[in-house]
Length: 367
Image (cartoon, rainbow, N blue to C red; front, side):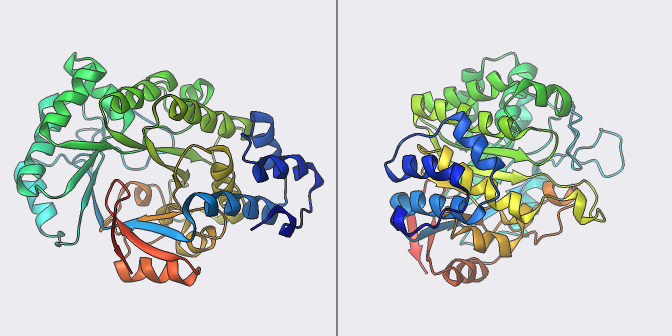
């Protein structure tokens, strides 16, 4: 798609469109201008242009399973409905037998990835988190362990007394193959001090991923948008990840996550708008020029917006999940899982090629 075919309604975007056409990097000011514009179609078409250059009509997904070994957490993040105190109703911590039972009753041979995240359970030693990986790798040696967030790794460092590198090496010895993207929230200290003051700082989150990349791990990163952050802070978040990617080239994908309203009964004004969701995803594609993929996360935005976003720069529709708990504990109204057939239907319905992948974007099968 050439720039000439894009009918720009908001003339303030003309300079940005020229930069996109010539492959020039966008600035903080450009990102803020995009967020302040109501010309969603132009923004979406520019993002689509960038994605077409990178991925053509390819859209990826993985057969994966979510595993949350514990919901007990020392932190009290304001956006979280999943966490519990140790003695609170609904609190749980899976032992080895419970973990294996949970997986065995949900597993099928097509699953290629375990996505493992949970609470920062300070009542369990670091060895518990190592054993979780060791147990799963022994029982399912051919399944990739995409495990723990940058914030969890920082927490493990505190409870173990090990360095970040030491923690990662111990987990890698137990089977860790990639880090999840969670724990990023918004990468500014103003936001973190208000919303998640007990979790890893901006610098520490980035240092965890930097260290992981230096050890040879490819990782993921997220952004939890739609609460108290400013539009400028969203762009700053993207730029901090872009700078680290310039340094390490270790990120495979960026996942914008729309914040959930804690209660499923919350009205529509408490939820993110479709326009903001699409705009944020498209702007992510435009700002993160060194990321191969931007993911549409159907758990937070629903399947219909996920499908529509494939025309606005998204190249990944995530995976089958089997059972998602964290966003649904915070009031998500979407499906907790999708089948392969449903994911393929979404992708092909947008006129795209549905490519089943492994964790590292190696194509397993074209559907």
